[in-house]
Amino acid sequence: MSFVERRKALVSSPAADAATPGRAWIVLLARAVVALVVALVVTFSADHATAVGALAFGLFAIVSGLVIGVGAVTGPLPVAGIVQGAVSGVAGVVSILVARDEIAILLFVLSSWAALTAFIELFRGLRSRGRSSLAREWVFAGALTGLFAIAVLLVPVDLNQVFVGPDEVKRALTASVMVTGLVGAYAAILGVYLFIAALSLRWSRASTVEVAS
Image 1 (cartoon, rainbow, N blue to C red):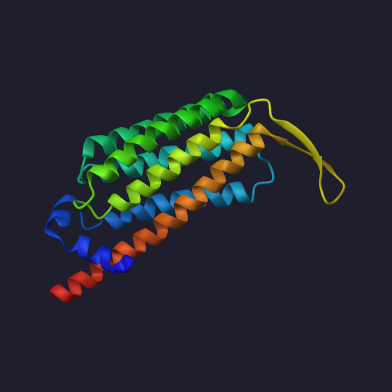
Image 2 (cartoon, one colour):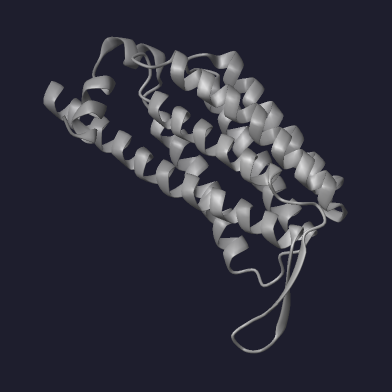
């Protein structure tokens, strides 16, 4: 059975319809857009200083947290979703206000946020399997965020590796450059996946309505 056929079967089931609002794809799309915007900003930014990484992550976490929290109100496991949104919002504010000048604090905020939200999203996804059409997306996002947490934890705070580029210019790979790049890569992967998932869910619901009518 193809991905779209499995999606149709889940969306058309009474349990999934009861647990997931008809506009759930909009929540996925909103999360995808936020992530993709952040990924583009980081990609085309020449400055990967700590302040840039902290601001990019902070805005991503605040807006995503708001989307997740609002979307969780009428969905399955609403308390877990609201807690996830709140954790993201708090982490975003701390990142912007406190971590912009200290790479050690930014690493701590990023790893703590990623570990907590990964656990919550995996919990929501696994507990909602067979009951929500968003379960697959929650599991993927949770797993990806968990990998992001591990990657951030592996970045040395004092990383400062000098190298000579192809243009014979000396450059330095620092912790701030590495972390900002990781934020952009994480946002890009998450954004692309959620964008495709949102459109898939939208199309499968439209097809189901057509067949039913």
